[in-house]
Length: 256
Ligand SMILES: C[S@@+](CC[C@H](N)C(=O)[O-])C[C@H]1O[C@@H](n2cnc3c(N)ncnc32)[C@H](O)[C@@H]1O
Image (cartoon, rainbow, N blue to C red; front, side, top):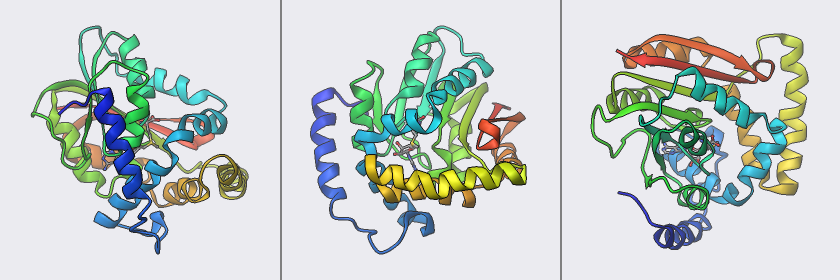
C-alpha cells in the first residue's frame, strides 16, 4: 500500500502522538528483544526523525552519502531496474537509486521517518516490517538497506524476506555499523561513540537514541555472522567491505 503526502503527514502525527505514550520507557532499547525491541526501535526513530539527517551528516562528515553511492555502484544498479530500499528512513538511499535510473519503492515501519522521505522523493513509500514484507515474491532486481538490519529483532528472518522478494540473480546490499578490528582504533572510536556522541545527541536530538547507536553496534552480529546469515537465507558470492576504519561495514550478495 503506497501513501500520498497528506496521508503520510496525518498518520505521522498520529504515530508521534502514540510514541509520546512511551510504552517501553522502563527498558533501554538496546536491552530489548523480539516484539519489545520492534516497538522500542519504532518509537525511537519516531522521536529522532526531524533531526536524523542533520545528525547523520554531522556524525559521518557527510561520508554516509558517498558510502550509499558506493553501495549502489557495487551491486551495479541499471536504469529501469526495480529496487526496494528497505528500512528506507528519510530516503537517502532512495534518491541515489533514483539517480541510477531505478524504479524505487521505499519501505519502513516508522511513519515520521517516511514523512520526511516523502518530502524528498516521488517514489512510492509504504509502511512495512522487514520481517514480514508486504511484497510479492521475486518482484525486485535489487534491495538496499542502510543502517537498518541491526535494528531488526530477527535478522535471519529479515534476510530470508529480502531473498524472497528478490528475483533469482537479484542483488542485495546492506551498510551498517561494525566494530573496528584494530584494538587501538576500537578504543579511540569507543571514546567518540560512547562519550561524545550521546552528548551531541542530547544537544541536537535525543540522548538515548545516540546511546543506542554504539550499544546496538556492540551487540550486533559480527561481519562473518552476517555473511553466514545471508548465505543461509539463500545469497551466494557474499562479500563485505569496511568503511570509516571499520566502524561501518557493507555486505552484499546475489540471490541464488
Ligand atoms: C538508522 S535508520 C536508517 C535510515 C536509512 N536507511 C538511511 O540510510 O539513512 C534505520 C531505519 O530502519 C527502520 N527500521 C528499523 N527496524 C525496522 C523494521 N523491523 N522494519 C522496517 N523498518 C525498520 C527505522 O524506522 C529507521 O527508519
